[in-house]
Amino acid sequence: MNYDGPLEQISEYKYRIPKSYKPGMRVDGIIYAGNKLLESIKKDKAPEQVANVAFLPGIVNYSLAMPDIHWGYGFPIGGVAATDPEQGGVISPGGVGYDINCGVRLVKTDLVLEDLKGKIEKIVNVLYNDVPSGIGSKGQVKVSYQEEKKLLLNGAKWAVAQGFGVKEDLEYCEEFGAIDGADPDSVSERAFERGKPQAGTLGSGNHFLEVQVIEDIFDQTAAEVFGLRIGQIAVMIHSGSRGFGYQVCDDYVKVMGKCLSKYAIKVPDRQLACAPVTSSEAKAYIGAMRAAANYAWVNRQVLMYLVRESFGKVFSKSWQSLGMDLIYDVAHNIAKFEKYIIDGKEKVLCVHRKGATRAFGPGNPELPDRYRNIGQPVIIPGDMGTASYLLVGTKKAEQETFGSTCHGAGRLKSRSEAIRTVDYEGLIKELRQKGIEVRSSGKNTIVEEAPSAYKNIDDVIEVVTQAGLSKKVCKMRPLCVVKG
Amino acid sequence: MIDFEFIEHTADVGVRVYADTSEQLFKNCAEVLFGLILDDRPKPDIEETVVVEAEDIEELLITWLNELLSLFFAYRFLPVDYDIILEEREDCKVIKSRIKGANFDPYQNKIKMEIKAATYHDLKVEKNDSGWIAEIIFDL
Image (cartoon, rainbow over all chains, first blue to last red; front, side, top):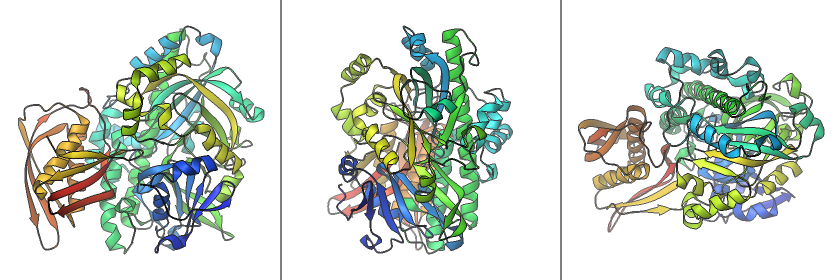
């Protein structure tokens, strides 16, 4: 399953798949990678998928891939593609994925490592008990059909109005926690049913809650704006739109499969099924996708509420007095309409980010006032045994990658290879020796998510920072993890 | 025992499933899919009819498997036993399936894996001299 097509180095951290590689490619593919990562990238079909994405009608400039790229279905995970609706540009549900608005949020605390001494086991146990996680878990948010429509229209604003947070939380979410234009009427009854039991649940697979300590600071000015210093404790939450999003994606992959012949679109993989942005099918998908995105923002808002309550319980203090403010919330599976200058003209493009994070630079009007001078916070989870990073976006990312950067470490081993090669007891022991406590409802989940199943996060971060797509602010080390 | 094997995929789960006939292939793929999700097979006491139309056999298989996944995760219908007829029409292919199953709540009972969907990526449905083969990648 190795990639043996062309991959031309065009600068230290950029490699090109020329559009001459496959007839039908409309633009070149560009992969951001360094020497070390390139070898692993060539070991699966991800580069082939970068070339396939270049077939999308209306694609602008390049089919892009971030250094955490790995083999997905349709788009690679770590893929970015922008299309121009005025040039027949399409939207593809496969370019967003099943877990619509899967994303990450980072919550600071005023606690320091010393405050957690002897309490880490208690914290992880309370989080594990009080935050619904694991396969098929059921949440605490129970809503009627009518109320669910309000939830889908108003996203995290709905959750805050229900008491799951404060209005300041909304300021620090991408899209302020609710994207405009959600259309619950474009959502199937089945998606409502599938989503109903799951709001406020973490989910399974690579979703997690992680308590972290700030280990290193690279940008003092930005860290001060975030209110972060070395030794401070933060919590990272990774989850998405659960079964609701999966069903929306499935419904519209079906619809768009039929659009391929209707609009005479040729793509090499049916999972890249798509429709012109201006078509009725695309408009319905966009309304439903945005509803799912808002569902995910509700989900992460409720999860944060539960995390705050759990910390309150352990430390017998309110979350406010523990300083548990939201630093930021980012979406890494989504399609957005954003303005860019293309050939000297301002264009509104449909930017697909499939396992990639928006990384707007300083001065961007989408940013909250507090972050306007430093750039958008970019939250990059690593694996559970190594580290995670907080970065900020750059102007260069806006110019080169439609304001996008990486989203994580990126998988290296398949889940089955991880199960074959990683010993559960050994892994738990190894993590404990590093001072990391892990809880999960399934042993397999922990083994599948073992650090050795992922690329080295430091290598990924080096590429995006050296290539100028993001700037490092701090590095966080895990203390305890609840895996879904 | 269903004749199948895993295919390596970096992020998700791929399977290669074998069968003697096309109907058997559909049944085996469904059994492999639900075998990944859980081990329990309660005694069936309800019946659902699932009819799906598609332009080709690949689309038919994926649409039908995703239909079963939605019935399970949205309406808690766990398929156990399948009675399948495949029809070739001039402009499409149709699967008519009568499925015996049981009410099973994946949000109350423990399941092994939450599969989001069967995907079209690298999908193969083929007939050769020794029978039928399907290769499917499931998104986890």
